Image 1 (cartoon, rainbow, N blue to C red):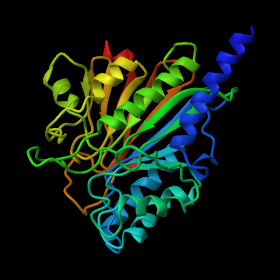
Image 2 (tube, one colour):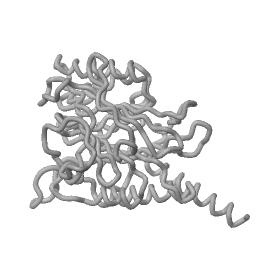
Image 3 (spheres, helix red, strand yellow):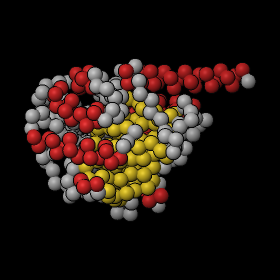
Image 4 (spheres, one colour):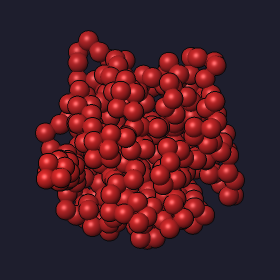
Length: 336
């Protein structure tokens, strides 16, 4: 019994250490928890491309307000390219206003355009930390800035029932002989694997149902869409603009056995979800106004994800203007 208690204590310390390393004190003021109905709802906004002072950005604010009022989520996640003009500080605040005004908790990961204005990623993070409801933070010692973990506690428990992994997919390739976009680096993947293992061990060896959010799609989106026998739903009007190299996040998630789905942005006229070896690779719905390239049928909107406590399943759908809901998908039922 004594050894068992010591083992349990060690697991608690390990998980607590990981959470302390990945979350600032300010980011832990809001506890994420399943509701009494056993549900937890997330709204994903992506590629808002807010340009401060540009009236065209208001279309994004209008759509975000409509979605939030209709869905009443437990959490809002922005998957990159939130602000794309100077002054970035003012633009960031304006882009987040529909969420802040409704006093909803929110999390952000950066895209390849956020730090191309007048603030670095670290400076943008400092701005975010000043907003009510912010859960965005950073993990020291690994590549990127917005890498962190958001556990969701059980409705009647202080233990994590599900886990959200937020990754910084970086911006552009740092290598002379590799062109194009950046990727999630090896040290970020190692951090994820270590964290995942700790949660699994603390859960009696069973991986916790988990989701991952980042901006730039991984190369597995190409592999998945190339197989016509794979389940696929939604709009695909452009090739996935992933990195030209595969850094190994996809296989790491298969090995860990916890991540059910990934959610990205980056490609404005895609909102599809496709099965890749049991993991649902999803795009969000382009949320921005006419401040960048657009053209997805039905206009801008958001992706909604609803988790069910204690089950390795979720539902997801796209909400667009006039309250229209499309592409309702059940995981894992619809993959079969």
